[in-house]
Length: 367
Ligand code: SF4
Image (cartoon, rainbow, N blue to C red; front, side, top):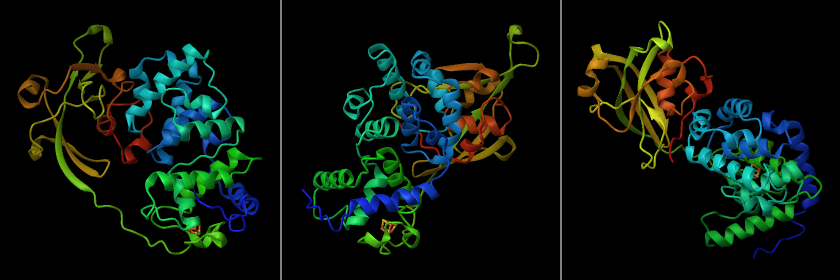
């Protein structure tokens, strides 16, 4: 256990400095205007692994479609995944959906108030439980996410890869976080710590000169900017096949696109819909419809899109799952992979879902 030096960790002063800074410098983010535990829960899940700018766009659309926990619980999974498109890590959406169904059935649709009771729910871990309980209900529990962990380690001069084992260091961090937490304003304090880590005490280039805690920080100014890890490159190709609908019931001029559902058995984006793959990444210039760059984790994919006529689909594409000709108006609402949504958008074949944030986001499509 870490020995907390009460003089070094004058928690009262630190709280005043941090909360004062937060009051003047916090970003205006939509979930900060709500004390609804459900809305906070959604935002916290979305913010795990996804950039804030992307979450802002998707969060509002998600809550417009699913304004309450019950509405989320009653929705089909494919619709939930469709609204999650662009955020990546689709496993989070599935877990959120399942947990909402559990709360609807077992708790009459009401999330429990305390962090301990929240943690007992499927899919809610210590971090999310503490965030909901402190922000929505003012419970005095400290949030420790990656940002908070980094800030505390730097403040205390603890090396994340030092002599201590990971579990011992984690205990020290949690103890320090609990000691510093403002019991009067736990929700604001937790958000202020996370905000400091996200905007000032950043992983590669901490802004120590403007940090409100620099006077008590043991490592201020010591963190050199480190280069981002090198991205790998891969080349792939997909078929864009569009036809006029043979079904007169869909109306004149309606078109369909060929989509393929990824098998449920795969670990990467199971159940999502995508354009059929081509066997060879090389596409002759005269067949090339567009080239798209798409980042997934540490890999930059250079994706060539070839227009393929309906009759040529069997010969030119590689079967990977169930295929369907989907009306374009329906495709916009389906659980598409981020790449597929980007391609259809750039080909002006999707018109419903706002796409600006998705087009610019490095998508993380794992799980
Ligand atoms: S002084 Fe620098 S290293 Fe220390 S907490 Fe502030 S930003 Fe982080």
